[in-house]
Image (cartoon, rainbow, N blue to C red; front, side, top):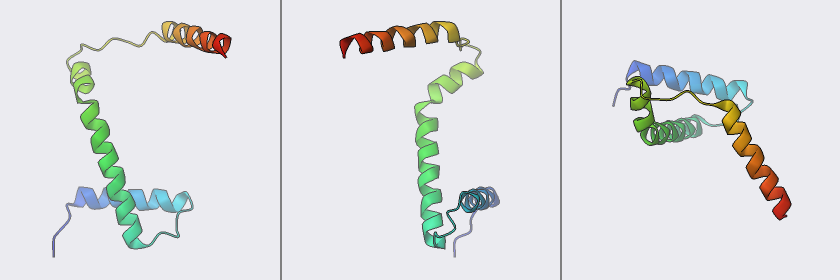
Length: 85
């Protein structure tokens, strides 16, 4: 029988507790494991896609988000879409 690292087991227990608190207690143990594995795969894809950004931030090369400029761009795009409808 294969063993599972204690950190993985702890993450799984936290995940099952989260599911139970959300009301997903109707899942079988097998379904819970499947949901956990899918969640782990999603997290790995997220980390893989963001690895370059994470490295830049760790190296101090990331810029602070200019929220006002972002909102201005969003408002311009939204008003352009409304006029095109």
